[in-house]
Image (cartoon, rainbow, N blue to C red; front, side):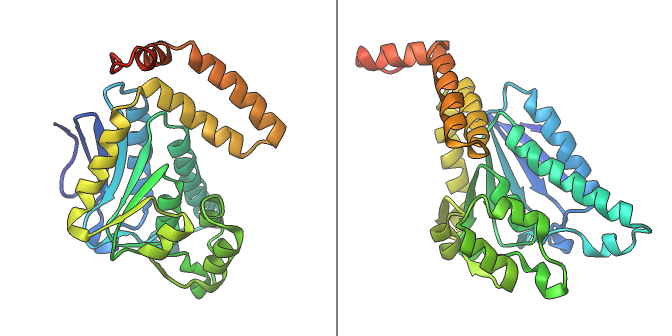
Amino acid sequence: MELASSPAEPLLEARQDGIATLTLNRPRQYNALSGALLERLHAALDSIADDRQVRVVVIAAAGSAFCAGHDLKEMRSFASHAEVETLFARCGAFMQKLVALPQPVIAQVNGLATAAGCQLVAQCDLAVASADARFAVSGVNLGLFCSTPAVALSRNIGRKRAAEMLMTGEFIDAETALDWGLLNRVCPPDRLAESVHDLARHLIAKPPETLALGKALFYRQLEASLAAAYEDATRTIACNFAQPAATEGIAAFLEKRPPRR
């Protein structure tokens, strides 16, 4: 196991068996996204993107909450509007970096996920939550509409449901989040890590170059017109067909044998 962490640091990093686990480590602040934590997250993703040994990324959290959003106490200390805008831009860039990362990213949601914390769950490629997890974009209750979380949330769940969450600020439970499409799986609290690792192992079994190519296409086509999406997908699958992993996989299928990876 490769570790780069100490208990005082806002982010703990561990890499083992092809899985890079990034643990938000501000439990007393419910893992609020401070400037320092965002800086560490950016650096971690930059390192992971170039690490061929990392096949899957897991974002987890210490303590009883996953992430309560931005650190409002820190933001109140800012001296200017520009500082606030810079922080939100930094967070938005991090969310986009999750999409650009070639490896699949799984959110391991152990509790409360509100505002930018709910945004983080929505922005990860996949999400597994404990049955006692709860979700909200509740800034409206403070007079602060969750504008940036709205970007990720509205791209994951239906428009009317996203609008309801954003406009009412009400919480939904894990089963509702699963039903609405915010989550992939819900499990008992004592099986959360196990469930995430089961999913990660399924992903590790797939050719990494195929997943990277497919992930990039998946997000590109979502933002394109129907015709442009099919044009892009056609080029992508044709290139994919010529890759060694696909050549071997198709041969193995036709020859009724396991593929050689």
